[in-house]
Length: 100
Image 1: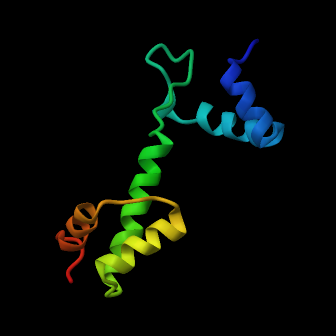
Image 2 (image 1 turned 180 degrees about the vertical axis):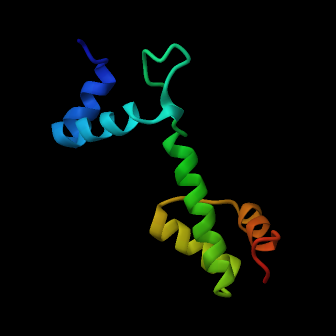
């Protein structure tokens, strides 16, 4: 049985035992079974979407601690290496999740 190139890369990156554990978990889950039951189908969000989500929670956490928009902007640039627009930071600060 051949594995796809990407699955071989994953196995190499995480190690054989971890790969087999992952495969066993996925194989035992009804959520991941294809309609025919002969395969496993995964839907995984893009890493960039996950990073964006985490960055926004980071900004909201700093806002809830009372940090100003310029302080948050500097922190995001320093700690995450990202330049986020002032407008985006203000939107997260003013949103219903975070009250200033």
